[in-house]
Image 1 (cartoon, rainbow, N blue to C red):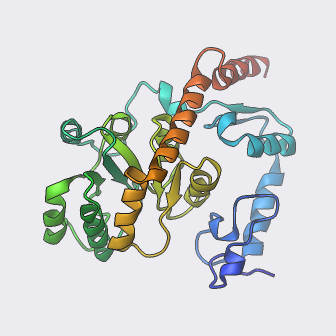
Image 2: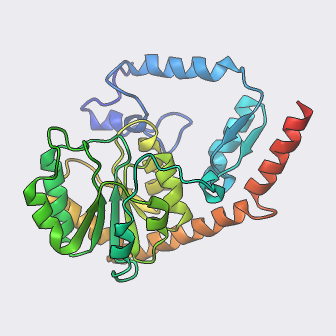
Length: 296
């Protein structure tokens, strides 16, 4: 019996979960260190509750067709795949005030040269990790736009002076950025993300490859798809240290491998855009949902 998902045995951590390829036990969205069998039993109970008459999902069939086909078969109720929902959103849904000065800074950069770093609205980092990231980003010799939220570095109300000094030459720091506009900008060549679903799908829609640094929840699952299924990015494993950060940025932006990731990202971008156009899968799903609601 397996009792913990994040134990020290690498063979168990890397074992593929039955019927959930390519997900491994270490990728399961478990918070804390509770028994794995208890977690899986809770999942089974939730799945078998079956009180919904239909399910709306912010995705498209082109992103995860196999999983969605399995889900449709198991649930045996209508699935309405309406994503990417943010493409047609008319209102700004940002949680924090956006600093638009970063767009002016991006306008001065070379096309596809900038690495954009944003770890979402919840994740926190220790001062040591921030310093190592700053040094690695600087040593990569690539320009970078870095979102560092107030309070995201515990015990520090402002950035350490050393970080500000390191960043000053090649980087630009904001407390929050207009992410959609940033990812659409011609200067952005890659996205270092926590891999929340919103950020993941926003990046795919703009054809931007990714460095994955998931923290918890579904982020680990999204990172696996980014790396192993869609192959439009890769995970940064282990502790954050400047050498690894430097290598990761170069791998994403300038190395030969970067071209392949960017090409695959652009192919996915085209498929997602097609899905919301007239006749596309998401367009049809919305029409089907409207008809379904009229009959209920």
